[in-house]
Length: 341
Image (cartoon, rainbow, N blue to C red; front, side, top):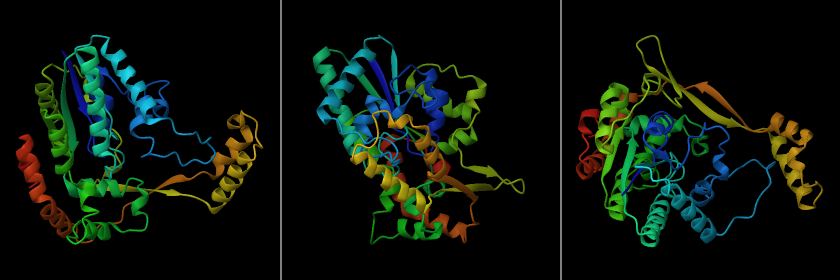
């Protein structure tokens, strides 16, 4: 039997920590960590099949390639999985913090159904048994929204945090509400895979890393040998603790792009259209220099103090209270302890 653990982590929920520090000790990783030497996630068959349409490369100085056939990518990915499963490992892990697309989860159902379809085909063709379990990392919605708001998402460039909270809590328009709701994804996983699901709240990781790992080990049904430097490290954080009282101070990251960049980009695309460059134009030192000077840069600034934070936190709590309670019921997770409902 093949034991396959799928971790489609939500952004800013400890998913990078799990992927880079924990799951590398948990079995054969089907999607290597981003910091693996020589690893380019944009060139993996996994990325091309599940996320190419969701995370577009906006750098106009890169060559635009024609999209590959969906069925070609699907069959190539199936071959890739079959080769991985042929290694006869006891445990396999698919840990990908953007498996559902970006934070809007606009690719969630498609990814879940597509992966299940591929796995079912492998089971039928190779006559093997594959047991799937899901591990989902989450965060209480107020901190989830706050962290995502401050983490370079263009959707919020012209919006204050207070305005975003109002949009999320607007009962007349649920478009923003579902950006930060976990229940629907959990129920989709249950419906499509009919499998066990472990919920890992980041609050438990912050409070007690040892118990967080013990819960994971119980679910995996084997002992994880994690070095202490990995166990107690933090990954991909966008805040620091204020020395006065320990309050978290978030860094707001936003892309800054000069008007000249867009002018040069359009000119560059026009030159490509009329075959001005030779085939190795991407190696041009001049083009790369121009790109490095004018390309969009991420600028960070300290987050403004939130007005009426307690009131906003209460509004978010009440908005997701019933949804979080239902998620806890479906999965058996103890979320009341961490103030999810």
